[in-house]
Image 1 (spheres, rainbow, N blue to C red):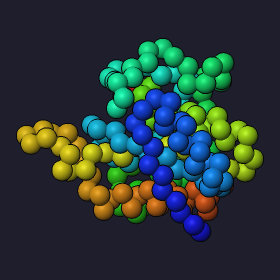
Image 2 (image 1 turned 45 degrees about the horizontal axis):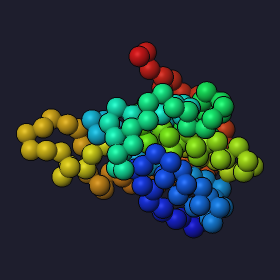
Image 3 (image 1 turned 45 degrees about the vertical axis):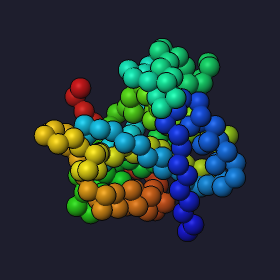
Image 4 (image 1 turned 90 degrees about the horizontal axis):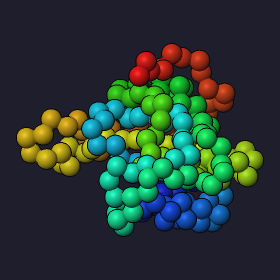
Length: 179
C-alpha cells in the first residue's frame, strides 16, 4: 500500500484547489484529511461536513468568509465514508484518546472535508473523511491548560487508515453526543 502525504494551505479555496490537484494526480482509493483543533484533547473522527463557511477568525491569507457555501447549491452536508465507529474502537484499543465528532466546524477544515466528499461523489469506490488532532505539547503557551497530545500519539492516524482499508461497512457502536 502506497501512502502519500500532501500539505494543504490553511486558506479557504486554496486548500480545495490543492486537494483537487492531489486527487487528480494520485487517484487515491482512500483519503484521510487531517487538521489541528486546538482545545481538543483527543483524536476527533469527524462524521459530518457541512456546506457552510463561517469563519470566526481569518485564515492564513486573511480571508474570513461568513455564511458562504463551500459548493454553490451543493447538498447541505456529507457524511464521512470512513468507518468512524470502527476507527474509534481501533484507535481507543491502540491506547489513544479518541472521539467521534459530529461536525468539523465551519472553518478551513470543514471547507476541505466538504470539498473532499463532494469530489469523491465523482470517484466511484474512493472513500474519505477528516480527522482533527490536538495541539502538540510544544504548541501550548506556557501557563495554559489547553489539552495537547505528543506527536508519537499521532500513530492514531495510521490506525484510522488501516482500519478504513480493512473495515466496510462501519460498526454499530454508540458514539453520539447529546450536545
